[in-house]
Length: 217
Length: 217
Image 1 (spheres, rainbow over the protein chains, first blue to last red):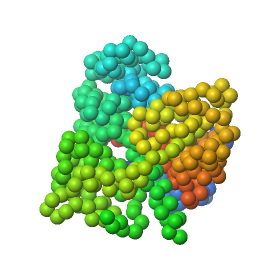
Image 2: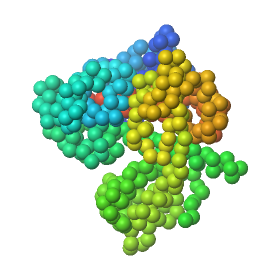
Image 3: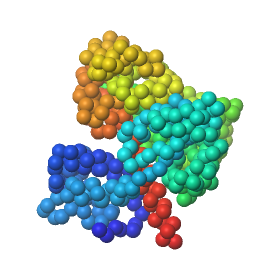
Image 4: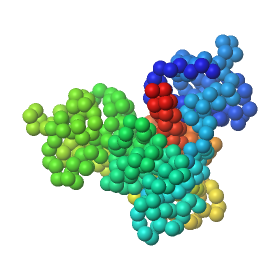
């Protein structure tokens, strides 16, 4: 299938995992094809939005037939790069690191945590979720020798940039950052930061906003 | 301080926690005031973007003086509703719930998890991070009797909507959803969904995109 080469907007990229989730649901229900109208009702975007989004990547769907659920799932997976396995390391095996490894271990198919790294002597040599905790000093060598794609940063905010620098130096391809800080990375390293407390603070705002609006009625 | 009443865009709201984080950093360093130029360099938004964002809420900063770090911190905290305490319940004390409670317990000041709820008999009566795990059947009564503001949904995707319905019925004000599903809630309930695997999938896309671009050079 032909792919267009134009730069895809970040907003579109952010919607693709959601499309994919709904396609998995449809697969589970045994649905083989879906019209853009039905897909639109299911996912909550307009049919024209869906067509526009998917047209970025080539011609999905056939006029008068709708989208093939399996076909679209495979295409979106391939576009996202989810048709292969990723090897990850976790840096920081404290509370946050343990939480993320527990989550990743269970819910993220295709992404494998190969090792965890710590500076604290009392944690080195132990394991979390069956993942060995190694000495942080070995990080660069390990990433280089074990074909690691992604570093998950779970250290506190004061140390996160140093970890990102070391990962970048070791040739990491992507960083999934949970430290509450905005990192700087070289242009060839992909970065995705998850600031969980930011989402909680947005929620607090919207709660107060709704209360204000309902009390002014 | 006067607040404008116009509806604030979601994009602005999403930037406020970030402003607040940088202000906390400045406070830690003992900085009392900052020019919009310096603030811009620090946070990575343009000075005009910062002025525009903050003007949504009234007149911060004085011409030729810059922003008062403490003043701006207090104002943004108040706008976000972070000048009070929130009482939360956690639904689902499995791996994901344990991860989130571990995180929330350590990093989210002003937000308190008062109880956790489960359907699994082997978990009811136990505790996680010092939080009692109660029977899910008691959820509605507990929320009503204990002035609970926020429900954290950590059940699997098939059960999440039922939990959201029950929380809404009990009068919850906000839902922080970690189940991998898009929930429907009544208009008076605020909803913030965190789809962690979506962020990992976006990262995979950007990693592949960068490789494609560099190999085509």
